[in-house]
Length: 344
Ligand code: PMV
Image (cartoon, rainbow, N blue to C red; front, side):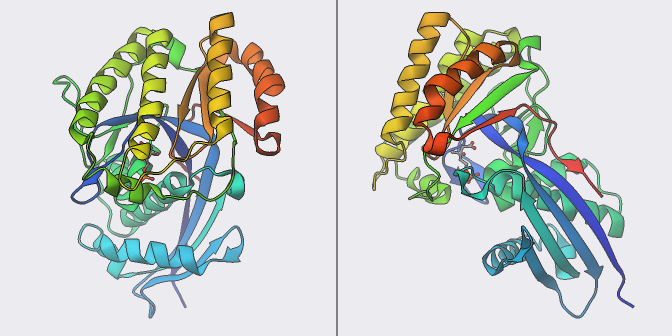
């Protein structure tokens, strides 16, 4: 009789305010980053495991009900790569089922949510089989980092930061993310409305982008700037200074894309409508003084960040002015969320 059990977790995507761009060593970040954990853009992962079976490794991987060999191979490779720090990988047979609550073709990266959900399952399995795992969230975050850098921040509720900072009073690590608790009440309920400018596959992956930072002419300046922006945005979040927060947020987004445009080879992920949206957001802010700011991931879609207290007027603006210039009018309204959750 096979002796199998199942664990499952959901875990969300996150949007970086200060961007992780460039890495070294074993998936360690070139600079500190901080992100907001989302609530609706979530992956659910369920893992049936068996110890010491005839087949070690991943015997099947179903994505949204369909066997997916490419994802299976990617996870198998990841498991082999972490054998030294997760020795159970050599003893387990896994059947994995994964699904996303957000549309596959929306151009929203799912590696952070999918990998953190999977790593949360791995650590729960370790706890059940071996026991005695201390600092569970830290361990999930560390494994998630090895799977996909920014995934390490998805584990935590509200806001998470990752990477050694220069702030003496702040505990920080390159190995795992930590939750950022010290924020003002006005940062408790925050929205992220994601404007889908294009849902095409990206022409350049973030892994390629990280590599290009190695010989980048602005590398040292970027590291300096990221540290300054990190300190500055944390202090704005602490005091509730939305104006200053927004200034740094937008500077980070545009810097990320400026770094891509000025690398060798160069690449441009923004589309004409990404720029049109930015102009419209800035004009709206000028006119209304509403705290509405944008950030951008490594793609053309625009994330609008604002306090939930202003949701009514801002959503009206999005629906009338911005949605018509999105791909098929698509906007995903998301908000700050609780991080990974155990389902089974
Ligand atoms: O985690 P990766 O390797 O997909 O890199 C993510 C990079 C950005 O999304 C652009 C920034 C970030 O900090 O999330």
